[in-house]
Image (cartoon, rainbow, N blue to C red):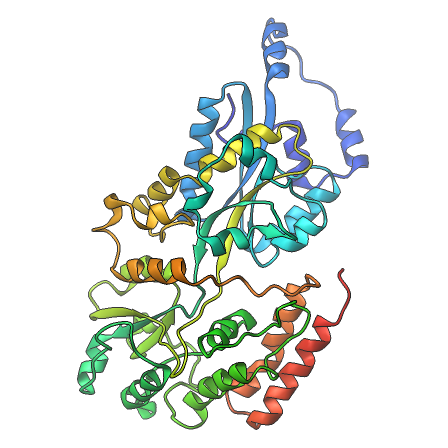
Length: 445
């Protein structure tokens, strides 16, 4: 069994990106001299099912390779090749592998690019496989499953879901105490109260700021817009509503005022190099995925605490669900086995292991968030987030034309002038709206 990163000829071609011409040249290379009687071993090898999986190349995701190796050991008729792929490179590698018919039998995707791959025929719809082997679908967060669904069909099983980058607020209790301030007693607080606290904790002359709230991604602003009762895309996801939805406009006013009016957040120049762990921010937005690793970074530098992002004055807080999932390739010769591997990678046991053996947050199953063996390991904020995500669905705002990256790039190139106050609010809002709506009106690629 060669599951410990063994490289077959077919798999080596995939990694090297060899074209059909290159493959033909490789086939013409002289064969190695035989060593002993290899007929029986060759026959055994041909009987094995050659499969492959692409795992997330990050030390915190070593659990994926551990589970894959265990699955391979339990399936001796499979020769499983295990690859590690950098997250930021995965989308392009998947598209290239599709073009050469070498897509991994199982591979991971992020919700940002997942719909595009599905639309291009990358993955198998899972309904029939789930009917034959239900992995406990009711245990997944509904928003997590929504992130794996395209045009009404499920094309992946989620192994991670979190409520976005600005889901939490972390407080430097030492800085707050120096200013006679305290964090809210519970999660029942508002954006108005947060802004007032951030302003009171700021000391710009000494580069100490109360907050760093800034929606660097359009989907970050989606969380703010939903907190104010609106959204950043319309219901059909055909139109950008940043400067159309009154709630979105109100949320943008709140974010902008932190810098332009309250001086509670750093301007463009002051923001360079500011880090919460360095003790220069009284508060910071934080994703649930970063809580445990940031705890290790802060160590004993200062005391901290966490709350859910505040409600708006008139509406409950909102979020967008960021999802990562495993899928079965449409090109796979062994979809049943590939689906079983997906099930093993996304079950409760795998999720608990991912938390116990690294600084990960719980996975996309509610049972992992509620696991008794994790109770004393996790900050109580995770139970607050569990309740929040269980009560209110928050699907990712993916444009219907699938041009996520163009929309995100346009947002990044146009929104900072607005939020840093380099242009008037009205001018900045309209500039972002017009540029992003232009992307939304493009046809599907």
